[in-house]
Image (cartoon, rainbow, N blue to C red; front, side, top):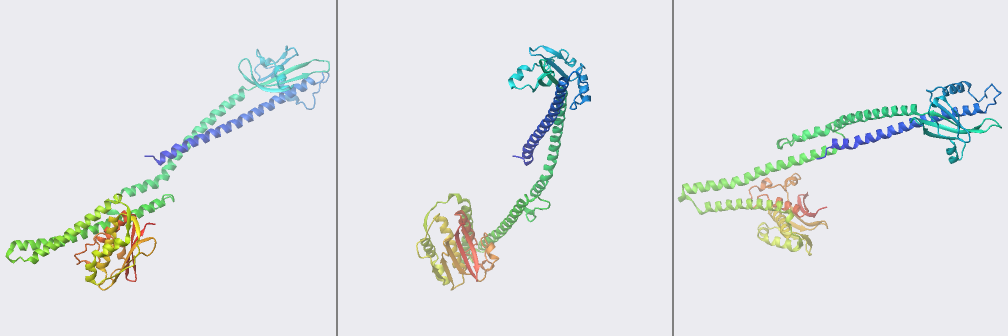
Length: 463
């Protein structure tokens, strides 16, 4: 199971590391450019002073105005210091060393003639290395002290080791700061994620406390983030549906106990009387036992049919079914009931209408709708069978003066019957439940509408 906390840490911590590396690289490169630019400027100033000094006429004791005398004296003094970072070396045209600063010691600067020929320029600036391994920045140029004097190649250089050491120290500081930054952000991220996931943890604890006896309680959405609020609403809606389902289940158990207890008690009483006073028993007593047994069998058969339909939704066999023919067959089975109650049937589905469905389940639905309408419609009333629209398979309507809108919400519950119909032994209150389950198995919708004391039971295609 993937953890949100682990997934966030898995993605965010590497992102922090990448950002830190990019920031460290940018800062390091910026500092490197700054130090290199400073070194280059210092080297160029060093070379400029050397050029002006060498080009100065020998009989002039006053330096040119462009020459910084203090800086010149400082530079020249550093060339004669063996521990100095400033170097100078000159060569004649034959490549023989003319002069070398004391600061070079046993080292030599690279001869510039070859490099000058490569870049086709007298002034060349580049990085190099002394024989002892020290990194240097070199500026090479050609100068002629006078009109009658030969030209000379001169290289001046500044040691880069101090800058390299500064960059190394700066890099270590940046790495240490980056590690501290990543560690600090990771710790803050852990606490932030823990704080952000607290509502989910609280919600999980609330859900864990939900039991069958506490379905009336709802999840508290206080301080819940807006992203989780829809989930809390859906869970509360689920709890409401579960509460209603459990309530219907309890009501079903009570109704089933009532349906079974009454005929069983009557059968037991009649049987005990017949056993105790057999000479007083009559055929009516045994007829009563037979009727009660038939009622029990009808209830059990209906429950078994309901269970089979609910468990066989994946076993439907689809074929083309003629709705008109199916209606006529169901009506023919109700002929005696129709005549007994003097019900007028208005069959408005006259043309052959076909539907691809399971004929067995479709027959169960239509048969229950028609028999229910005939049984509960008032005597001498009408039952209308039609198809109201293209989305409707069949609609059965009958007069229902004793129903109200509240009855429509419980009409499809198992063993539900209107109170005035409790004495009817021919119906046990499972017909509409069976029809509703069969409709769901066929992906159809069975709806009940009460309008002007007229009950309309519609079997429609699912939207």
